[in-house]
Amino acid sequence: MKKEIVKPSYSKPYPDIITGCDTSECYIFDCLICKEKVKLAYKEQIFTNNEDRNITKEECDYLKEFYNIGYVGKSHDGGAPIFGKIYCEKCKANYFTYTGVSEPLNSCYHIYLQGIMLVERE
Image (cartoon, rainbow, N blue to C red; front, side):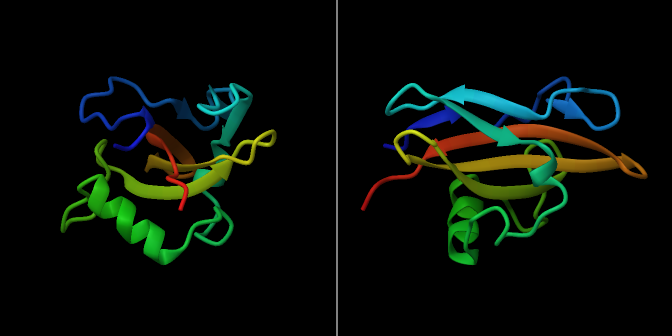
């Protein structure tokens, strides 16, 4: 079974961050292995490509299937699904991340945190 910290929602009433309005720079959660604080930078969900988010095309394809991203390719909140991989600085545990990003106005982004999952060790 996957160890998920955050699970997708179709009905989040508000974005986790609205660029230009919110001052938060990252989402912080406790590592499931060592309890150290792990940070997911919001701006990295917008202005980067897969390589910058440390994730391969194969991992993205796996996450699209896992999170049931359908033919239309929208995230659970209706935005673009953005996947990445971050790690705990202390114990090096890896986490897959899934955010939905939409741009309702030019250069104003709504970011919805839709998933964080511990990467299974091989």
